Length: 370
Image (cartoon, one colour):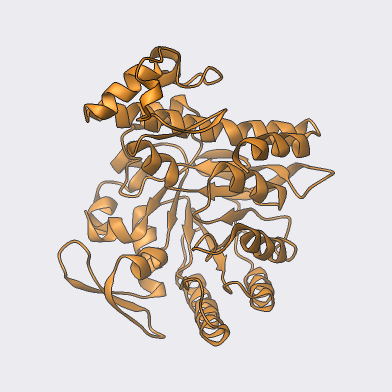
């Protein structure tokens, strides 16, 4: 029993699997469902920690792979851990680096021991084992850390998916044996590709491991969304309701409300910040490409229903001008808006669960983003 972490479900929607909860951590409580802004390299791109707090970001995510390569986990340990290094006193989740090793690393060599890969930065070679992933995350000092896993692409054959899943399970055991710091919660990760029986088998295995929380990996990797929701339903029907559930790498508005309806508590996604840097904005009317010619003389706020700094102070015409002029401020304002919009969405979703009207709220969002 770890007294540093606990999770309580405050209310469950009577019409769906949506639930409002509270995850207690050493750096504060997290009201779920929650979206976690992605701070890959100890920074959420284009915004600072003060701005994140102003938009009520409760927890952010950082990336083990990137921080291991640069500036190095030992340097961050010397700085007092990731919280002090980046001046963020709220919860932090670090992923294990598994997905990045497979997607970014060059000339990967996967074995039972771990993954040998070539750095995308300088070509140097490295080996990350389950034990090494735990060691790095212990040095980073995140509140929530992830077990090392292998994420297969879509499509992958049944035989290869099963072999990968079984190795992920063995790696999960090794991560659990290596992890000794009770001030950090270790989450297991369900894999199994797009096969119902493998997803069920993995969910049962991860449940039996008795991690503090459970993540669902290997989704939103190119499969059709209905298939993703089908796999999600298989898993959430098995994972214990008494522990937080985290759907990794998923965060578009439609996926958020659909995931919440299927009992997911935590989400992360880079699209909010990436789309912002490419002039694509999330609004209460749907996605907006601010470079569109029709906004050249539009002197109304980006979103009349949004209270973020950009919407309170600037117009669509000004935002378009910034992007056309390649001014850095354009990316900053757009990022502030997209993050604010998404955090407000999950906040409203939680309130809708508490008010017994989540199904109606979900339908409203899907009417715009479905």
